[in-house]
Image 1 (cartoon, rainbow, N blue to C red):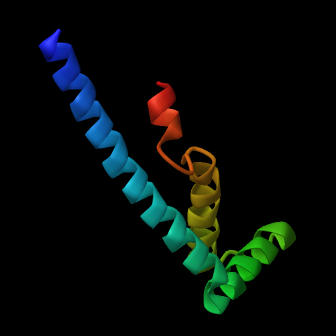
Image 2 (cartoon, one colour; image 1 turned 180 degrees about the vertical axis):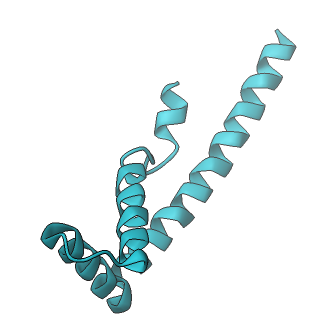
Length: 86
């Protein structure tokens, strides 16, 4: 029984750390979203992909990375509650 309690306490501490890190991640994402330069790059990359403009290696890489970023955003919980539910 003591081993189980110790494991639960360790898990609880890990969840607290995870929640702190996730808050930092979401704060960074919010800051990035407010950055005018990033917003401009995001719009240019989206326009580039929609218009299928002539090949531009830099814009293709940027559009690909933004797409990966958008896809991974749905996988990030906003806090540690998902872990707690598990």
